[in-house]
Image 1 (cartoon, rainbow, N blue to C red):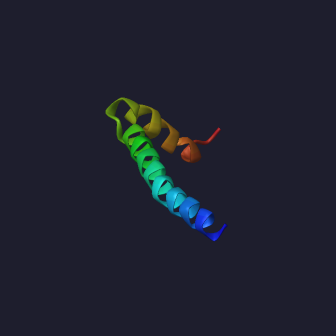
Image 2 (image 1 turned 180 degrees about the vertical axis):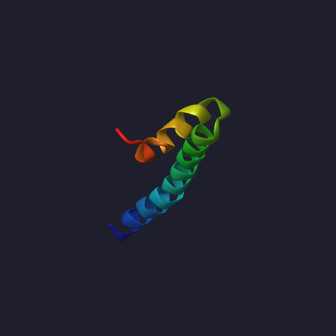
Image 3 (image 1 turned 120 degrees about the vertical axis):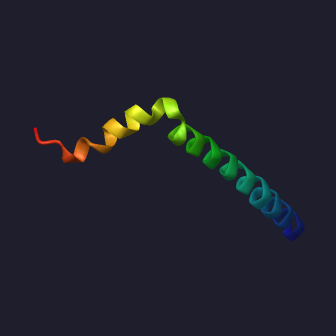
Length: 51
């Protein structure tokens, strides 16, 4: 049983790290994409608006 756990833990750590790195790259690309700049600039001004 201990071998199974160690194998699964190693698999999860390796592929989990790869998965989250890819996900982070996608989110970063989305946030920095020039087409989305206006949307994020507008959203950043929401706390400063007075209704």
